Amino acid sequence: MARAFVRCDSNRDRRTSSVKLSEMIIEFAGDFIDSGASLEQRQSRLNAACAAWNIANLPKHERRKALQRVLEPYRVANPGVQDVGVLRRDMESLIKQKIHRFGPVKKPIVHAEIRDDGEQYSILAVSLRTGGEGR
Image 1 (cartoon, rainbow, N blue to C red):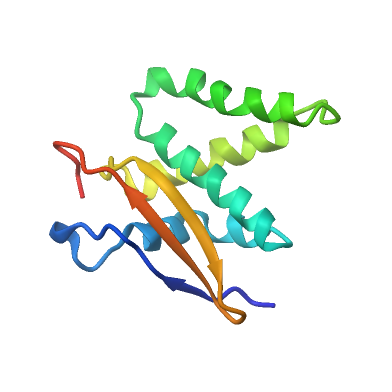
Image 2 (image 1 turned 60 degrees about the vertical axis):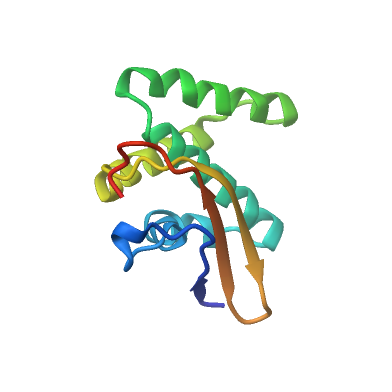
């Protein structure tokens, strides 16, 4: 089934009234999220995309350690997985996409969920407002 996302965002930034955080998530990670076979897998992929977003907001010299902090609990929770390399590559790709497409946007994502109404998916994204954010 083809992906059909509806944009739903609880925290629209008034300075960029045409672009919502949920729309940015769909733009930089929609294909990655949609590749999950179930709603639970899509939620897991959305969580990974949001972690990548937040890591991309960090100074470059802090990103490697932050990525390792995300990957270590995954490895522990999935002892049958010998190599977390696929997830690492996915996360690194998402970090690059976020920086390339939305580098100035520094709002951290504190919660995101995917909802399924039967025909379409929507993403609800909650962020914190921070001083000096780009959008």
